[in-house]
Amino acid sequence: VYVLLVKNGKVEKSSVHISYQNNEYAIIDKGLQNGDKIILDNFKKIQVGSEVKEIGAQ
Image (cartoon, rainbow, N blue to C red):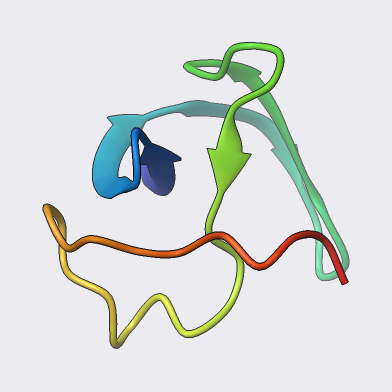
């Protein structure tokens, strides 16, 4: 299982471990660091290595 992160303005793929998941949320207990910026929307249109611009939390 992986998530897409933004590091230095580019998209990276990072492996994570999900310890619990239901229809509303998932608990990730390995693979993320405090402050990591995760892409949560339009991830099907985004490619690893693409340059992205952060627009902030909404």
